[in-house]
Image (cartoon, rainbow, N blue to C red; front, side):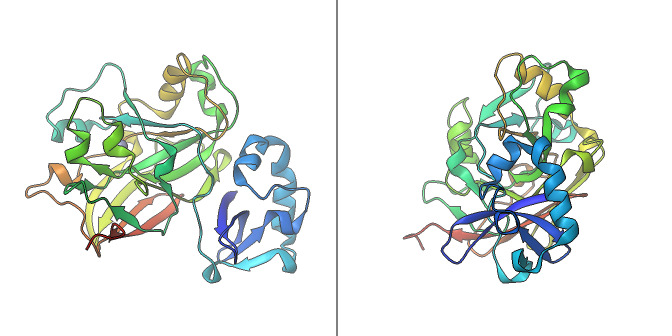
Length: 291
Ligand code: ZN
């Protein structure tokens, strides 16, 4: 299933499922016992999935919304966003760093979340805003000390993440969190694709384009620590909750490592595509009040 959220006429987000290629099914309109917030659906996904699949099959007309008439928002509001640094062999090489023995973990605060087509807003305090196309794993149930062999079973599904990063702010200190956490620096979506559709998250092609030019072109097979390893390692330390998002690192080709560097400017468009998950397509705009 492809689950998401769209903005209704009042600007409120409503949980939906992709019923057909160009049709959304509003879950609560189809069955008033279903939640209007997708995070609640994620919390109870195992219980609710059969009913949602049944409704997708029926596609009741009064609950259907043509996709082209609405804007998708972030599919859900994550709790924790756990970022993983240097998790692709080619990205570690281009930044001149050795392959890590343990994942580099940083926080990305949830205020950064934005939708799959909403603007990335350039902050006035950075001149080095960069893209990072990433696979995001969404936790589906409360988990602690999960063995690696069982780790994928606690993943509800996957989203695309653009881990937008202000390099000058990120590298001001050894701690990356501030440079990763400006408002709008975490476009996610377009849908949460449930894990049953992604049996092997380590076999997905990933590509990023800036203004149509291919800048990242890799596969999740190049990760240093797999999704299952990350869930296992993180859950030894952190209780993972439904709706927590692990953004699993980016491959080579980021703007800061290019010669000359390629940072984002007002008017640019960044596309992040991952096989079977779709595409984020975010315009880049100057911050409000800054020209
Ligand atoms: Zn990243």
